[in-house]
Image 1 (tube, rainbow, N blue to C red):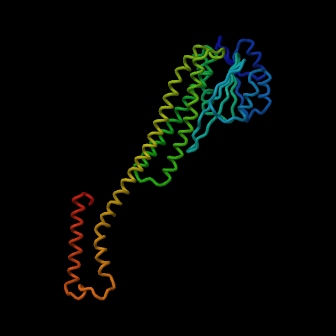
Image 2 (image 1 turned 60 degrees about the horizontal axis):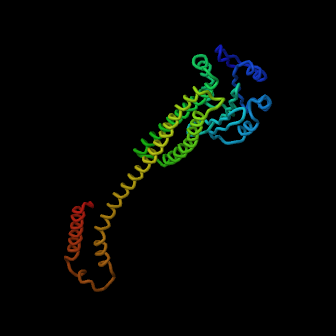
Image 3 (image 1 turned 90 degrees about the vertical axis):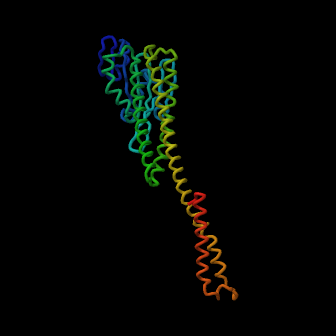
Amino acid sequence: MSLDFKSKTFEPISLDRVPDAGRSGKFCWVDLHLDADGGAPADALVTQGLCPAQVLDHARTEEPAIQFSRYEQCIHLVLVGCRLDGELFTQERLDVVISAHALVTVHRGAPEFLRAVKREYLTDFVRHAATPSFLLYELWDHLLDNFASVQKSFEDRVVNIQQALAGSPDESIFRDASELGSHLLHFRKVVLPARTVLTDLSARKSAFVSEASQGFLGNMVGTVERILQDVLVDRDILSDSLNNYMSMVAHNTNKVMSKLTVVSVIFLPLTFLCGVYGMNFEVLPELKVEWAYGAFWCVVIVIALILVLFMRRIRML
């Protein structure tokens, strides 16, 4: 897409016309889909000086991680969006190369935040854009919206797990809680470098980022801080919910063990008596006394009542 900031006009152009558009004072956005476009467009980008060859190599081989690097004729950004497909957490890499007359985006698949940019950037271009750096702002703005949306989804899952733990959960809830905790940690690792990169872009002067855009990028640092803080809060809530549930389980277990202890204390002397009179000695005087059996039960009942009253007094029963 060719953008003319003076006349506020735009038009789709072919890749071979990008250098001519740059020489005429226009700014171009070239979007390269590595899976669909094949190798020829990528080679053309390198030949025209729009994208360093090592950037394409990194886009094909390296893992997603937000980073920022400078070249003599351009700057290179790696932006990483996130996607939640049910319980599956995936990352979407987008390489961005900004030069004097063009912005090149390189990606596999279809990052959600990039699709959002494509839906809205032309409207914002006509209404608000003053410099080519507005495209950089658009990318970061929709990336942070993506982060906020994912964080909200995680927050809802934390609330659901918290409510499930308050009832009678099955064992699957602990697997879900473990997976969610791992996803929150990975999400934080994705978002954390964004703060450093945004701070660098907003603070260091660059020929490819206008001062007006730097101010807006600097304001986004606060948004990243808020998202990171919310992620930490979600992890704390998840951890506290699990700890509270385990404390409740331990408390209930202690109550059961206390009751079993009371029963054991009551039956211990009675077991002793049964053991004495269950011995196989020929001489047991009480065996020949008529009222011995009734006396035995009286002794058992008295001992049991005394122990029950004692347990009640010390509040163990």
